[in-house]
Amino acid sequence: MGTQESDERTGGTAAGGTGRRALLGAAVLGAGGTALGLGGTARATEDRNGGGRGVKGLPVPTIVGHRGASGHRPEHTFGAYELALDMGADIVEAGDLVPTKDGHLVCRHEPEIGGTTDVANHPEFTDRKRTKQLDGVSVTGWFTEDFTLAELKTLRATERIPANRPHNTLYDGRWEIPTFEEVLRWQNEQTRKRGKQVWIYPELKHPTYFRRLGLGTEERLARLLRKYGKDKKNSPVIVQSFEPTSIQRMDRLVDNPLAVLLSGANSRPWDFVENGDPRTVADLITPKGLKEIASYAQGIGPTLDLVIPRDAAGNLTEPTTLVRDAHRAGLILHPYTMRNENPFLPANFRKGSDPDAYGDVFGAFRAYFATGIDGVFTDHPDTGLLAREDFVNG
Image (spheres, rainbow, N blue to C red):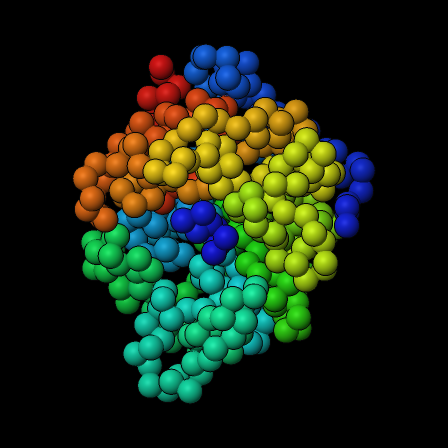
């Protein structure tokens, strides 16, 4: 999940799109009659392995390890990914995909890697530091598109938010930057090792930006999915992006389940800005907008504030109609991002002011689960799974 987080053309064939929408729609029904505002509890589906049933074989609410177990290890490392599986995450967000100079897709939160690697400590790369316009924002640092894969492999990952996660700095320098092809191989290895299907949820980062650099990411991702036989409607790979036209492009390239990520209501997807489309996220979450999304995608990943807004003091208010409206359009919802630490929680669930102390995260999970969401991204899969157990068991 990317910088659009609140902390942080219609495409495809009718047959392919409808089939995949029906598949994910079943996951909605898995939570349906009990959790969609009817005062009951959600249920977790029993087939945790998927069993060839695609997304509908996943538990509901689904727990997605956000960039792995990034509350416990530096994000987008195999250490974070494997720990998320060890904790029991249903899906691992592996990874946020950005290209190298020589066209490889690697897993980093952003193309700027000064905050997530030790690149600043490498004197041989001092002259690579640049200031660029990234989706209309001036960003200074080191960018993946200026490095070959071999050069990136000399770097090591570091904790992105050490003020909130000083314990994660213990692991700085331990893991290298993974490529997405390595992730696909890892997925197969972990599936064999664990005896159940491992799911991943890659995100295409800044696809318009990279396309303008001649590094189109959708085609590269599609080629890898086809190479590993993971481009089908039941494949254990859900593809997501904050840019709707990127998801439309993927809909024409593969049959995977797809999701459109949605930032704040007043924001505009960057592809809309570049293409002169005046619509905002507020337009996309109307019944009309959701119906359009459902013509090429099967799910949405809204910021949690679109599900339950916060007031001026940061407290949760009343849920919006987004869950109901999205379900009526046949879409599932996997909002982002639940984190245990105080600064990331609604004000009425914080405990004290320590930036790395945990608040009443179980209470916050309960409030969001009660809206009928189909899953959630979380940096702390262990907490999310316990919260789901509490919710499912009433």
